[in-house]
Length: 246
Ligand code: NAD
Ligand code: ZN
Image 1 (cartoon, rainbow, N blue to C red):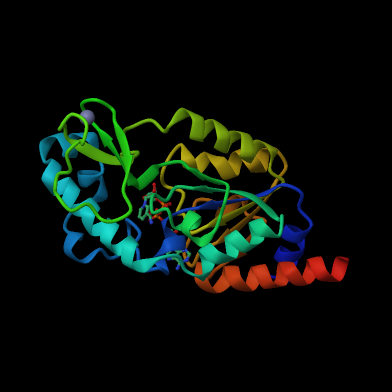
Image 2 (tube, rainbow, N blue to C red):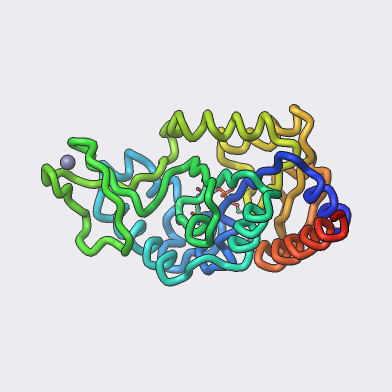
C-alpha cells in the first residue's frame, strides 16, 4: 500500500478504470453477485437488443429496479476518494464501465462512460434523447416527442461502444503512466483491453479487488480488498506523500 501510494503520487498521468465492484459497496449489485428478485435471469438475457424487442416491459422492470437501487444508494467512500484524487491533480480521468452515474455524483469531473448511463433514455423510433433524474414512472417509458418506445441509454451485450467514448478511453490509456483498476473482473470486451493498452505504453497497473481478475497477471500492485475501504486509505496516503514532498 505504501509503495502503491508513492507510485501513484509520483505519476504524471494517472487514470482510474472502474467496474461494477466499485458500486457494490453502495449496495448496487454486480452482474455476477446476488441480485435477489432477478437472480433467475442472466444479464445476458436482459441486457440485449433481442431481449428488449422480445419483452420491453420485462427489460424495463429490471432497469427500473436498478434505477431505484442506484437512486437510493448514492456514492460510497470509494467514489469520493477518486474524486478527491482528481481534485489533487493525481488522477486525470475516470474511465468507467458503470452506468450508474455515481462517479459524477461523488464529484468526479472527467468521467468517460464506456457503457452509457442508466439515467439517459433514447427513443428507438426518432432517436430523441432525454435525461431523467428519478426512476422512470411509466413502463415502458414513451418518447415525449413522438410517442415511440424509449430504451435505456446503455450499451447492451452485442452492441458496439459509442465511438467517441471509446476513442477518448483509448487515448487516455495510451498516454497514461499509471492505471488504477477498481472492481472489474475484466470479462467484458473491448473495455477490458484498456489496462493492457496502458501497460504496453509503459504504465504501471494497480488492481484493487477482493477477488481474482483478468488483470492480476499484468498488475504491478494488487490490493485484495473492498474499494470503499482501500481507496480512502490510498487517497490519505497519497496526500501524505504529496505533503512530504513539498
Ligand atoms: P463484474 O461483475 O464482471 O466484476 C465485478 C468485480 O468487482 C469482480 O472482480 C469482483 O471481485 C469485484 N468486487 C466485488 N465487490 C467489490 C468491492 N466491494 N470492491 C471492489 N471490487 C469488488 O463487473 P464489470 O467488470 O464491471 O463488468 C460487468 C458489466 O456490467 C460492465 O459492463 C458494467 O457496465 C455492467 N454493470 C454495471 C453496474 C453499475 O453501473 N453499477 C452494475 C452491474 C453491472
Ligand atoms: Zn421519439
